[in-house]
Amino acid sequence: MSHPRCTTEVIDPATLTAAQRSALVDALFPCQRSVFDGVDRAAFAAYVVDSPADETRILVLRDAEGIARGYAALHLFWQSHLGRRTLIVRMEIAAEPAFRRLNFAGPFIAGAALRLALRYPGVPRYFFACFVHPSAYVSLCRHAPRVWPHPGVPTPPHIEALMLRLRRNFALSPVGPGTVDVGWIARECGPPPRRLSPEARFYLERNPGYRRGEGLMTVIDFGTPAAIRGSLDFVAHRARRVLRARGAPPQTAMA
Image (cartoon, rainbow, N blue to C red; front, side, top):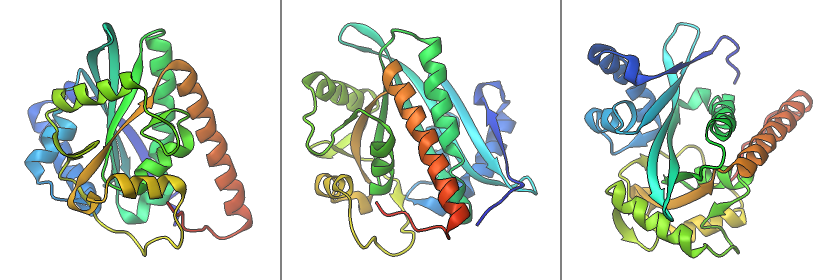
């Protein structure tokens, strides 16, 4: 399903009045509810729009009538790691089912990686996520060259220490080795896949409680070489999808 008249807008919540931020929450919360259960409006507002991050940008996807149909929120946090000033990137993404095939957040993520590489050369940068569904973990594994934990790849001790520090700094409650209670319960979309990739099997083994809103703590290298490679991989992936779509009906992606 295509939506050629959809538009996107990047919003800095810090520039909005309290009333405007409240209106933004009202516009985005239905998108959130279409993807995740377990989060009320107040918790959503505090997590996404009123985040305590040092910097936040929110990409809003709107239909032809101007109604918000999806969002991607990017947050930057300055932390200390190995005695160095380190930039931690966190994100939340949601889109209503009929608009998910647009993959509207991909260029936003790739562009952010490249901009951060130019703005902060030499500064360690990591993307930190607590994935509550295997599809999100698998998607990043396909484009990011360095992901931890990852099947068949040992997690370096300094990354394990970083995960522990971030778990504490973000006040995340542990529920198992490498998993935390996020509370965002992904609504199931479509039948389960007929086969699983190694990354999907790995995720399910590490985080069997994801249906209860438990997330797998994941760190992605957002450093300059990784950012460029990941962005180029994304562009190539999108180009292949466009070419396939022109010659054949779209296929359902499987984790």
